[in-house]
Image 1 (cartoon, rainbow, N blue to C red):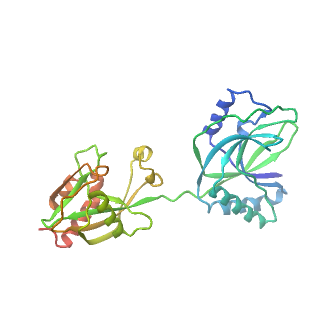
Image 2 (image 1 turned 90 degrees about the vertical axis):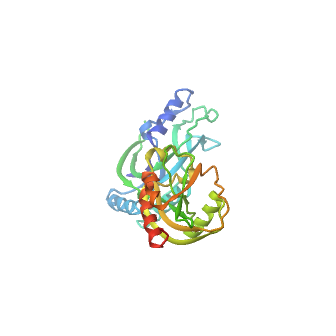
Image 3 (image 1 turned 30 degrees about the vertical axis):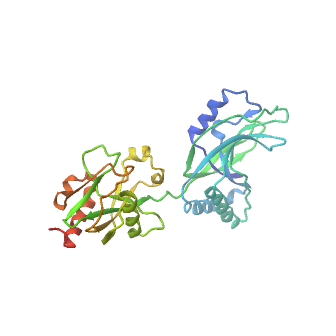
Length: 329
């Protein structure tokens, strides 16, 4: 058996190449669409009785490697000087190299020494009589998610290789990620709470000020930064912090169409709450127009009915905390 481990590209990439290939004069022999693949590790000739051990080693390895994305590069020829293949380059990545390396180590334990090339998709095979043209200007401005690898047997014949998938192995699913976020219940000495409205808000409802917590920040540091950035506020006292009290998911449309790329890796937010007392002698708040369209102070007893529905769960916790701290008059 002549084995290799491969990633099968998504149908949309294959279709994009096929559509492009009809617009140009291809030299040589195009690879059949069902045979286009990205080789991860080439095992070579393996005895059939080793197949169960090989499959077990691959499965044990890849189930611990998270799914990752690959980006498609330019069309090219291999080798460069005397080409035999037309390829679509795949941009190398640390995740792909890690997959190759971990599989190589796992198979070395079976005394199988694998080989690997830079990632690419072979789409044209050239014979010695083929006339190579200049590289084609094929464009596929997208990336694709790698969720599994396949163990494939390659049988060589005069008409070309034939491939048979022996087993499919799934990579570890990416953990669901919630963005760390802090909600700020800003209270004044009249027991009023500050509510704000975001510029993209399409309702007449309000929310408490909030913002993301950076990876290197504490919750308290995030509170200070957000109040400075969004309200130009420096003079305040943090009375209490309750960490990780609430999670919610963003609507699917917001995740697809949102403009904040820093949020693209997350499905929602995991919220902490900070109750903050503003100083008696504070100057007028200066909201950042990019973050706050309007603001108003309201009685703490009126807060919940003015909040958008998705904000009310944290609002209930904030109201209970206001009462616990003796700030409700």
